[in-house]
Image (cartoon, rainbow, N blue to C red; front, side, top):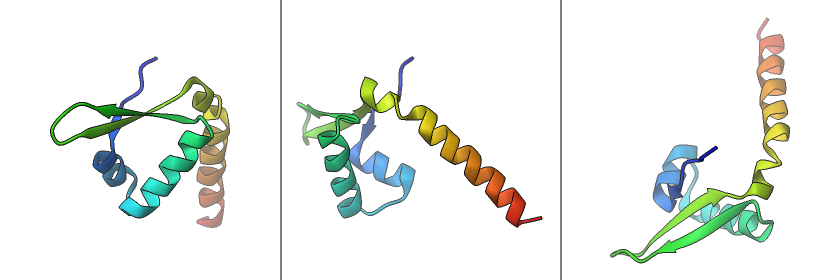
Amino acid sequence: MKYKLYRFKELGKEIGITSQMLSKELQDHKINKLIERKVLETKPIGVEYSITDHGLTFKGVIEALRDWGINHRREILK
């Protein structure tokens, strides 16, 4: 399955965080081998981020947290 590649500004807009916070999070995720960073030889120089195979192993955990959050929200809004 192919996943979307994101550029830095595009990713920041997509998830709605500041550039400073995004930079820190991306560095942490790269160190933990959850994402890959590819420098593009464009002008201006661009960078793309993509999820690694190791990062994909986290998918089930994220989906479980999402499902829990949806169910929890429904419960408290009753």
